[in-house]
Amino acid sequence: MTTITSPAPARALPAFARGPVLLVAAAVGVLLTAVSGRYGYFGDELYFIAAGHHLAWGYADQPPLLPLIALAMDTIAPGSVAVLRIPATLATVAGVVLAALLAREFGGGRRAQLLAAGAYALSPNFLATGHLLATSTLDPALWTALTWLLVRWVRTRADGLLIAAALVTAVALQVKFLVGAFWVVAIVAVLVFGPRDLLRRPALWLGGAVAVLTTVPTLVWQAQNGWPQLGMSRAVAAESVYAGGMIGFLPVGLLMVGFLVGSVLAVHGVGRLLADPAYRFLGVTALGVTLIFLVSGGRPYYIAGMFPVLWAASAAAIEQRRPAVWWRWVPTWPVYAVTAVLVLGVLHVLPIKPVSAHADQPLMIGNFQLDEIGWPQTVDDVVAAHRALPPETARNAVVVTGDYWTVSAIQHYAPDLPAYSAHRGAAWFGTPPEDSGAVLVVGDPTSLAPAFDRVTQVGAMDNDVRVTNLVQGTPIFLLEGRNRAWAEIWPTIRRL
Image (cartoon, rainbow, N blue to C red):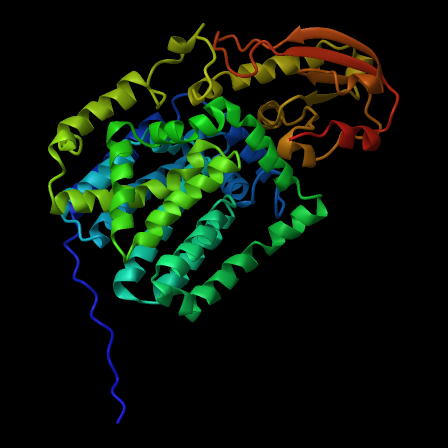
């Protein structure tokens, strides 16, 4: 006689603290909505809109989902910054709720759920990018959903959750390829530390196949265009010096994702996961993902998606057992309140101050708000330089910008002005026509100068609001007498 043993019933969950958690999420949503149209487009948002108007299965610097979303929102409400940012607000609000649900999966009740939700809501990284339509906004929210599904699977062994995790992964792969690193580390961690039963589930591999298949069109585009994404990864690694390189990676990452509350809960959460055999693989995954992005020269915010599960594990443990005396004061509401004041009132991670408050301020890396100001005035300067050309010169003159933000701004605010750039993804939007004449170069003309007989500076960018953003003061040159074909010139000046 064969005895069939039924699986152990899933552990009962505490009640979802629906009212308080939704109140925190709603407060974040209201705040982000209130400031969403206060300044203007961020440079990357203009690029996403431009990319959306050059729809493709892939881009040099990203998969296609963000440009598609930007195109959809700009089609619904052309020129509306607030409408463009609705998906970012929704993703951030969803992240707050998912952080609370993660704490609940770890056995956390009302207090634990609020601690985790509050950590997400007050994260400088999630707030600063939460009011922007950016990959750094959607990607962490998707990772949070993914880890919630995996934690829930560990508790219930319901394989439908693995299919859902695969679908979330498929969407994340259309935002950035970073989630691939998560799965590589997670599978190795499960193989070593368990639960190995996960690797024997057909749903895992079926879902994985589906997720991989969704990337095939993007991979085909990359192959047809020389795999620019690989070059982009090298470019990001070269630029990582802005965050202190490898030495500054972890400190900056912890600082961006959470000051005292977020940082302390994250470190404690790693320890709690590593100490729990059922969830040890997630603690190892958090460390492994961090190591991969640190060594490969990734940006500090690449690890942001792992923090909510760490906060949740910490919050549930704090609720069940009081922390040691020396740090017991950290996960308390007074500290959360002070954090809110610091994030909003001192760091000003959201565009709350009037535009005039940024006038004559030095440019600081990481101050996203400076690059939400002055784009219409910047384009006006380029248009004015074009109009100042003699009629016979202006008739077939084109604009070539040194950066992908400026060309995107021109295509948005002055779509009738033929503008191109050999920088990053914009380099694949098209090349100037062969029958074009003079070129207005916005930026350094050094790479183009050998292909022209005459180079003359004719102006400089001045956004008229005295805000020192990345393009303020950029020179404008007139290049005449092209002596080579664009088909020959473009591949030599294209850069990431």
